[in-house]
Length: 303
Image (spheres, rainbow, N blue to C red):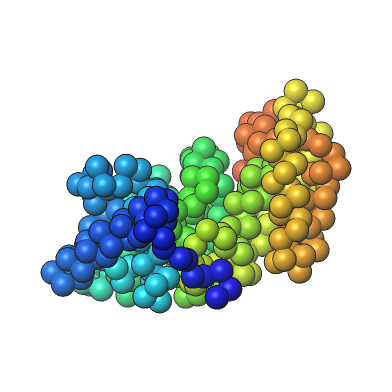
C-alpha cells in the first residue's frame, strides 16, 4: 500500500537476501532490548561483517525494522555513532543528572549520542546556525562568532547530516523555539543539504527529523553576482549538478517555498557554483566580520 509494502520471493536472490538480513537484525534487536543494552550499528556490522558485507545493508535493515514496528530507531537499541559537532551557548541536563555545558568547550564537541537521554535544554542563544561543512564550522569557532554575534549555537553535520545531528537539531528547535538558520555552499549540494534538514530525506522515515521553520541564510546563488568573487573561484555546473537542481525544483515541498525555488532557478540560469571558503578572496575575515553579521542584522534569510 502506497509503496510501503515489499514482496519477498524465495526465488529472487535480492529480496530473499534483504529478508534474511532483516531477520538477522531482528535477532540483534531482540537480544539488546531483552538485555537492556545498547550497541552501535558499527559494532554490530564488524561483529557480523560476513553476513552484511556492507554497513549500508545493516542500516537498511534497521530502517526497515523501524518502519515495520512503527517505532523510532532508538527503540531498537541500535544506535549510530555521531559525526556532527556543536558549539556555543547551550547546556544539557542528562537523565542521570549530569550537566553537559557546551559553552565550556571553546572548540565545540561531538553531538551527544542519544537525544532521548537529554532531560532538559537550557540556552540564552538568539538563534541556531546550521553549518554545512566542518571547515566553515571551525572558522566560525576560531573567530568566536558564536560569542561575538550571539549568543548563538553552532551545529554541523559535516556535509550530509547523520541521524544524531538531525535529532539534536530538532530537539533544540522544539525546546528553545528560536530561529534556525542554514549556512550552506552556493551550489546544488548545499541547497540539497538544507532541504534534508528542513523537509527530510526520501530514504527514511522522517518523523521527528525535520525542522520545518529552518531558513536559508546563505551563501545564496543570488549572492554570487553581488559578492563579485574572482572569476577563478567560480566553477561551471556539471551535468549531475543540473540533474540535482531539476530534482529539487520538482520537489513538492520546495514548490510551497517560492524563495527557495528562486535560488534553484537562479543557479540553473547562471550555470555557476562556488564554496563558502571562496569568500576569503574578498577579505580573510569577510564571512565572519561582514557577510554573516549583515545578513543576521537585516534578517535577510529565506523562509
